[in-house]
Length: 270
Image (cartoon, rainbow, N blue to C red; front, side, top):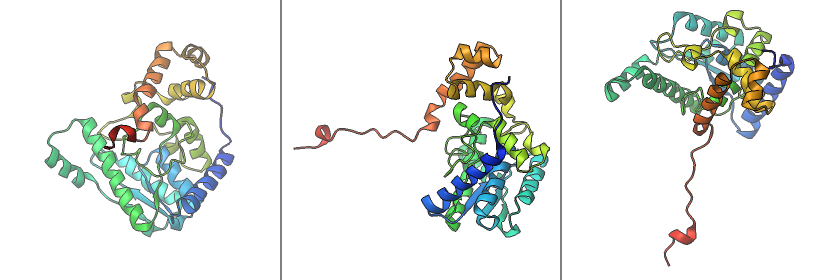
């Protein structure tokens, strides 16, 4: 699977930092950025990139564990904070489990997926509250792979203000992570939203990003058909069609809510 080329990580870092700085300070008129740090590669890169682009003193990092968060993820999140060089007063750790338990009591029994989506949305509530207090923006960590297949929670991790990594496939985010000096244990860690105990992306999706990324690149960047992409990447047409079906089913996640406009000529009296 050599269809996906490597990135020039140094150039990517420079261009993303310039774009993020311009968007936050000039276009949005805000004073900094808030990043949720999970211990995974995407949030690690988002945190380090934000600190370098906006400055450590204008970067607020938040670690928001729940009962589903493994100890090693928590430890990696602290490693990211240290690597980002953000002042201690700009780092918060808030256990969201009591908030989730309040939802348990209010809503009754939930499936793991339902509770996981609630957890993602609770985290976003906390991030936006802190961002509002400081006149900051919430910096997202979603990548192009996740966006194209809809692997994010609507109004959860998808409810951010800006997505600096949204143009980079997961494979490229890992390359950028290594360039930024993040430990291999973080840069190469198997992806997992950790929305419930033992939750991993590969198990939920049924395939790895080593398959997903080159297929997405072949179809959406090279413009190949499903059959051509399957041959080019070296995977079955069934795998390609499954990935494209994930993209199709999640279209509503990538669009703002539709406004059902009515013609004034038909609704006004007189």
